[in-house]
Image (cartoon, rainbow, N blue to C red):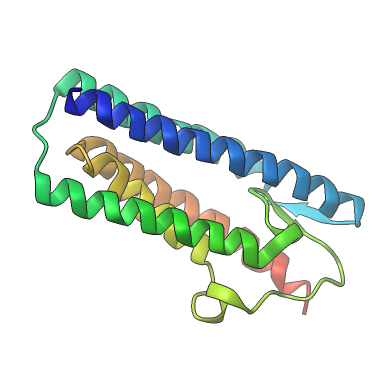
Length: 172
């Protein structure tokens, strides 16, 4: 199997993982809203969906169109980072439980989660997103996708974190 085909399998696996996340997110968002949760930052959410979909599609298009050489040491290091980022993401999901979703929904009266990775990092899920967004394309040397996603994601995360911090401040 070609390296491009193997990379496609990896990207499809990450895509399936994202579908599983969305299923958990939708269930948890419905629960949060039923508990009186208030959504913030709704206006940036569609851009986040497009950007994250673009990461997967962009990486595949770049690899199949440009056919960059795989640098084995880079590929293995980036694959390890992709796996670590997935582990961190699911640790965040498990730690937040019903409070985790892909939107910013805060349930009034809910306690702010300070356990798990949140004990050390204020926004560990976004660390996972940043690492994955850089590492996934670089598994197959898709530099352009890694750079474009990282730059756009940095801008989006600045907006997202401000919205999330403001929403969480209302819990205190």
